[in-house]
Length: 405
Image (cartoon, rainbow, N blue to C red):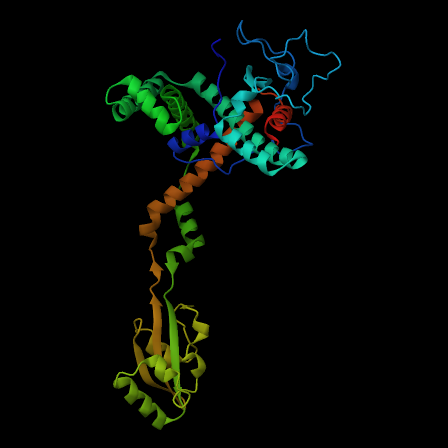
């Protein structure tokens, strides 16, 4: 019998569509699945659970979660028909709910990625622990299916003819490119090579690709007109993120402090003769500042900005120095100093004019994500779908029966 019921892909379909729409919505997760004591918005379980009609004459929805390949005449009337744990696999052909009036079956939720997760959980956890981890993965997948189906249904109904032609053109171009790349003109070879390379049917890929384009186009049409970025927004963002655009120079320095003028002359002579600064700085007879660490300042931590040290003449002397260079003797009161810049990292100084385009893109992306989230929430409020907690509960029981080892 040919399976004619609709299929539901993972949230990756929505993610792909949103990538085409310019900004993904990952991270914008609604709370309608998470709450256990608040009703889901706009859920109408009485309309969708328990009164489903068959999708076609050959397929009858399964209203319980037990295997359906047992002859009813042989089934014991003493056995419960609920989804309890048994050695017999629970049915993945069970109907678990409705979305937009269409039946949703368990095997449409258990895609390859979710099954891999559940199999992994089954190897690592048992009983309640398996249920906990399986429930989280299943509800995440179910959320993607519901959102994707609601958006796609509305998008298809509102697609303009010009948009439809553009989308069909891109799908045809994608098909021709894949046929050329994988089959060198041979459709049969292209399908076989594509399946081998992607683990997915070529025709299924083209359907998914089209749906991504439809969703992306629809989201753009709903969200993009609401995005407004003005110059004041750009300037405010620049000021708020000034540390990103105006990072100061950073230096690591060594210091030699001579005990007297005679010692300062000896140090100067040694340095002129080519002796390494750190070697002289480690000589306690020459250096009275931290000779145990070769005069290293601030524990070797880089110091940001132009106020590196509180002794003004020393600070002024070191600012022009590049990494490895030194200067001295520098007279400051009764002391004579020598200073070396061990490491120097120049700061970042990006003017507003140079950051303008990047900031505008960032602000537009943030607004897109915010408006798109509101669009999804509104769609969930007015959409028709079975109670996610009830659907999820059925799916968890099926997963428990099949994958908990």
